[in-house]
Length: 348
Ligand code: ASP
Image (cartoon, helix red, strand yellow):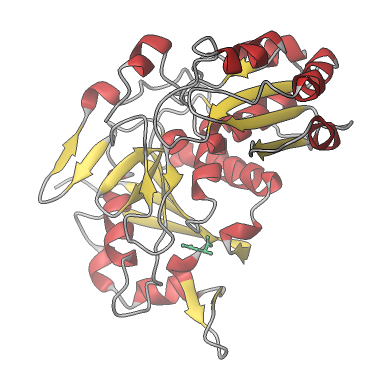
């Protein structure tokens, strides 16, 4: 038998490695994951890979993650991935979809697996979902078929920039509403080979993030132009606008569209994603969508709000003019959006 592959286990925080405090709440604790792993000797032999455990300081509840933390994770991966078969990133589930999306845009030249996983109940608890998530994520992260950023939870491997957290308490916390799972894990692992991304051209490197003011706003009945102007005030450079249905916004209030048009004219990139869990934005379907199109809003297609926000942040951090950022938002860069034909037959 050949030598077991090595996999990087990057612990950033989250419930998986947490311990219960005296007041009954869970919080991250340095060294707790290493201690728990030492108590599971079966994780130290084949078929599992050899582990290089790296623990971040401080460990975070993922609600505390910021773009600077995405950069920290991307840098650690770019530095260490060339020496291992792949990586598992242990991360809280609350903002895992954001971090997974951000990593998919930040890691250029990725040619091996990066699998984010977490748990709803810590590894040290008896009824925990952490052991299965961790074991399977480690196996998937040593499979050379996978050459992208993915999320593994509760039997399904999802593309990182396609997933969203859909349950605060279920073990199946994530869904990938517009793309089937990359693999379904039961007695066997069933891969959807046709969906897997090809290896990107080397070298592997982490793009740089700058502190760019980007905001997300969910439209609601009664929103006014004045509110939008407040949100879009300088120095905001990008907005992910979560619209109704196929990408629609109110049209009875001229001032609302005027506020949007003023911002796009100033070079603010506004991206339209739908509030619906499934389906895509088609701004030409309704008059209510055409108004946005005419005001210079870019279609986010079937991107999740998490993918749109992180992609916009990464693109606005690069030395690109707003029209080029808008152009790239409208095309697929890392498997995050379907082309229009594919989206038309949206995945059930
Ligand atoms: N609040 C936790 C976190 O996101 C929840 C979890 O890990 O599932 O870090």
